[in-house]
Image (cartoon, rainbow, N blue to C red; front, side, top):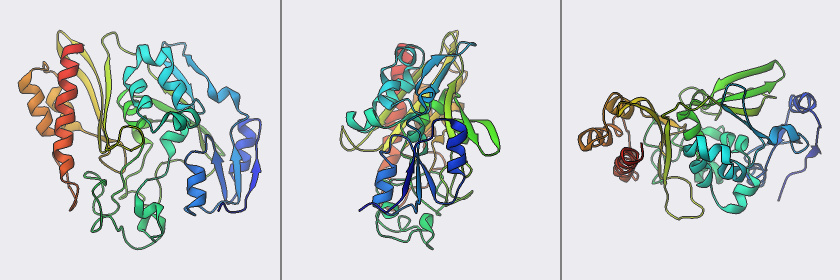
Length: 327
C-alpha cells in the first residue's frame, strides 16, 4: 500500500525547485522507480512533486555547436528511437533500447534512469541494510551473485542499474542541474557516488536539485560508440555485465578510448585498464586479448559472483572484435 502524501504539479522549473526544497519532498518524473520505492517503504515522502507539466524538458534537439541536448523528461523510448541519437551516438541508442521492457521504456525518463535507486534485494527487501541506515551490507557475506565486483570496498555491494549512464559517460556527456543555489553542470562520469564516499547516496545531487538536461558534445568525425549488455533474461533483467565503448580512430589506431562497465560496481565503472590497453593500438587479436585480460584488473569478486570475471572478459573481447570490423 502506498503511504499518504500530497501531490503538486508545478508549471515552471523555479516552482518545482521551490516545492522540492522542503522536507519530505520527492521528485516524480516517469514514476517507474518512485512508485516501487514508496510501496516498499524505502523512502519517507510527504510530498510528491511532478515534473509532467515541464514540457521543455521533453525535447531532443541539436545544439549550436553540433552536439545534442536531451531533456531529462525525454522517455527512454524517445532516446532509443531518435534519429539524431541513432545516427550520431549509436552507443547511447543501444543502451536505451536495452532498458527493461517496452512498457517501462515508454514510461521511464532519461533523467530518472540516471537517478534510479539500487535494485539490490536486501535494499529493496525488509532488511535494515547499511544503505538504509543499518549497520551492515548483507550482500558482502550473503547472496551476492548479482552484486558488484568493483568499487564496493567491502562496504556496500550494489550495482548501478542504469543502461544509459555508461554510454553517456563514455560519450563525455554532461548533466545540467537546477536547484535552490542556481544552475550547475557536471559530467555524467562524476554524477554517481561510491560507497566509500557516501554509502547513503547514489548521486551528487543536493536536496532540492533536479537534472534538467543531458548534453552530449559534438561527435568526432571518426567516433565509434557501442553498448553491450549481458543479462539472465532477455526482456526484464538488469545487467550482469555490460560494456559501453567510445573511441576515435586515427590511421587505423584507437585514440581517446573511454570504457565504462555496467553490472560491475555501485557506479558506472570506468575501466582505465582497458582504455590503456587499446589507446594508440590497432584492434588486432593481440590487443583485444590484452584488453580482455585487463578488464578484470583490481576486481574483488564476492563469494558467489566470480563468474562475472569471465563475463566481462568475454564482453570486452566480443565488442572490440565488432569494433575492429566496424570502425
